[in-house]
Figure (tube, rainbow, N blue to C red):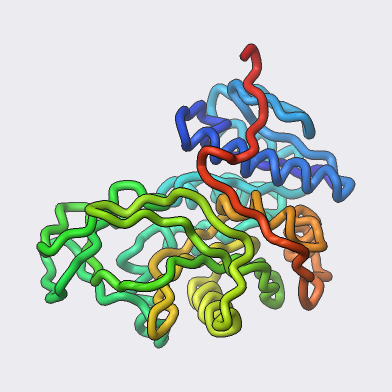
Amino acid sequence: MKVFVAEYAVGAGAGGTILKEGRAMLGTLVRSFTASAHDVLYPSREVVLEYGTLRRCDDFGQAISDLADECDAGLVIAPDELLGGYIKLIEKSVCRNLGCSSGSASLCADKLLTTRALAEHGVPVPRTAGFGETLECGLYVIKPRFGCASEGIRVTGEMNPGEGEIATEFIDGEHLSASLILGKSPLPLTVNRQLIHVNNTISYEGGDVPYRTRRWDEVMGVAIRTAKILGCSGYVGVDMVLADKPYVVDVNPRPTTSIVGIEHVIDRRLGDLLIRAQFGGLPGAVNIRGSFRFTKETLTGEKLAGL
């Protein structure tokens, strides 16, 4: 099968840590699809991978449209607020989308609507308020209503979200994520510990894959419910704070940095599982072998052309 993987930081020419994480995820997936006997293409401005076929990219959106017309299946990784629009480019073609639908991705990108949708279905979430609303807590987490990972998040004793921000109650607990793949049925992958530094801000530093908590089934059960409620498909990462309950704090409708570790510790190829999720035949479970720790500084990257 001919497959493309389009990662925004690599395809659009971003820099810094975002590019490092992006090319690590892209490299992991391209190797995985290649090892699963698929022909793999990827758009890039400068990054050259050891595996797959490079398509030089000047316009990320146009590259997705062109590859979707050429390939049997495709997967996009992009900032959550942009992801839905890029997925629509695949949905307009006969190419099979290996990730969430554009509608599901757009819902997950809106942290306020996502939180309210989950609360309506009884999923534990922090109490949350949007700009201009009120919320009484001892400590607040202020973050962008739309955005990725831990960017622009601050911890404060004041209820002061600006326009385009939301406020949630600060919950003290373990910072975890649950990774799963959804096809006709959900396939749990791993529960992971997020290496989070909390001070006046919250910053993501890396992760342990997997994290062997005694509450694994509880955490994964909430993640599966969350993904189903939001209509997700393909790979999904659900971020939580584990306290008296697993509180869902963010939903990533796309591959996350945890896949760098997951590909090392499960006994199946992620690329093969993503294909099976859309075309049938997901296994009932995966086996986990060992563990993998990564930080932003130790992510395995690929060489840059000309460097």
